[in-house]
Length: 167
Image: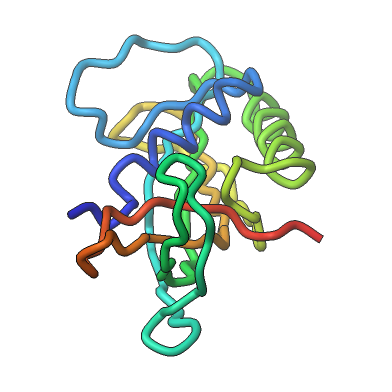
């Protein structure tokens, strides 16, 4: 059974790329091309689970695919994403600051589907000896739901990341 978080780094990177903010997942497992522009390296730094309801019971919902009512279970999660920005060393870091401004706009104005951005922070621009690039560490804390449905035999289907209600 899936916990629902396996693809979360890629989903965040895909969201940022769709907003024309170059992003890759941290530790991609393969060679990466050298970039001339600032790029965001997406990682998951933390996941806090908050139980809701009795035995995580969220109530019933009608499944139009099976034409029946199903019981839903879930947990509220608070995800901490590492969104570290890297850029070539030339320049004074203005490119990194502009990239963070675009990142902030993409996350604070709309945010990825299924996630509500609750906090966004960045650190000081520094020289990263290992990557030989300028680096600006950044983090976003997002709220979401991990939801599962019980099948007719009382067994859970896989958990999926679901959104929170926006107000």
